[in-house]
Image (cartoon, rainbow, N blue to C red; front, side, top):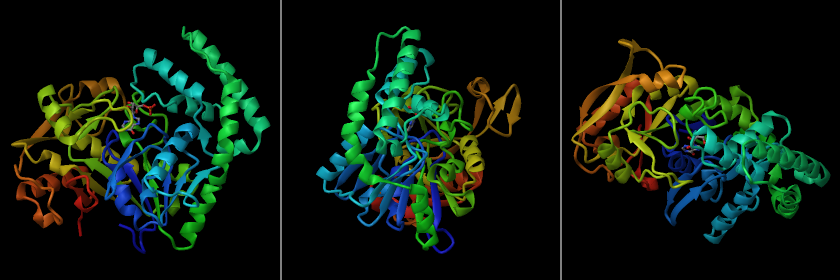
Length: 427
Ligand code: IMP
């Protein structure tokens, strides 16, 4: 994917997250000088099946497993400093060294204990089904212009003031919601004072670093989290996350201009899953959903929740192609479909007796749409050993060609298993 024409590549989820971005980023990161996470936070769970075992990364970019790749937590991320160090320590214990290779933007906002309390509280009333990692409340503080940024840790007096005001506000909101839970500013300030000397050596002007790397001819991968349908603007609002998961968010969240981006790769699972609440038009009946869940190991990498499972939805992916400007697709987990006789693919939606040309703009309508399926034959053979498209059974190639034609973007990679060598590059 990287080459003279593509030096800055964005990798995004093109469904509801959990498409296998970790695996693709890990594979592509080998050719990148820099991998940058640009939005979200510890709500993400990017799984990489590396030669020395499986790693689940939440805030650290999936490029970290390549010893010569530098990784950046960009300004668009909301960073949970406590869990960052759990992640760093766990990686160090397994021999992954980060000194000088991991950089954190001074402009990234911090997720604090009161954000998590508020997120847990809103779960009782709002029913979004969040990951309870404090993501929404942290972004609320960012956009409310009262957040604490990583760079503020250089100034303890600023942090103390911001945290006191934040805790007071959070406590008032908890009281209003009828919760007995409260947070204490002094404990949070003490926690930040303890973490600051560990965190500050990682802190840098990340936007500058990305720009300098590109200027110097280096390759930069911008790693999205979640997926297009969870984007705060373009997703199934309000059943979304609180950040811009789509490619436009990559420029803002990494600190570069949109003209610096050369290509956008959308990661698409060969079927569809969603974790959390909200519409999922192609959700399968429980018996089939259970089959996909078991075969695909469809349990949340962050929360362990069982994912809702269904068939490939071309309306969703076509929409993701449009809102991200996808220049290519990586289709993952094709092997999960190896045992099915027949594979329904949703080609369009009907609503009120009419064909829809695009996704409706509201969840009430999306709950009502009737998916129209084309049934493609299954291949009923294992595909995990395929290393080129030609190695795949004919029916699997027909399935992929169908996806490509319906989605309207070329397939550049096909995943047939979790291992690094099980990612076929389409040449
Ligand atoms: P939040 O991002 O924790 O606020 O959760 C909002 C919605 O996004 C919920 O439906 C979550 O299940 C979903 N979500 C957040 N992060 C991920 C992810 O990494 N993969 C899949 N779904 C996610």
